Image (tube, rainbow, N blue to C red):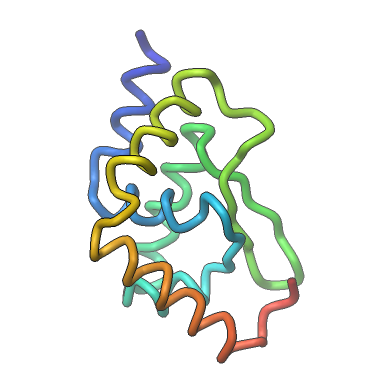
Amino acid sequence: MKEILALLKAVSEEIRIRILLLLIDKKACVCELMDVFDLTQSKLSHHLITLRDAGLLQDEKRGKWNHYRLNVKTLSCADRELVDCLSRWLRNDSIIIKDRDKLEKVQKRKRICPK
């Protein structure tokens, strides 16, 4: 029960679902995600840490940049099932599509973060 409640709490805000769905297929650094979501570093980091602490994301430090991606290696069955459902339900959502497009543009334009 505690694991399920922590998982549901982690995805209880729209921005966290958007971040999670954006990082299913891509890796992104905090500076890129700040541009996509137009959030300050502190607000974005709060959401990223919540998702990471719930086991949904993993982070990797490269120099001064933190890169995030879906934590596919250690997702529990419940985590995996929720991510799959969210992905199916929101695959064609206009907000999710815009987020993906914006990240692609930001990553092409920036090229300052080590990959």
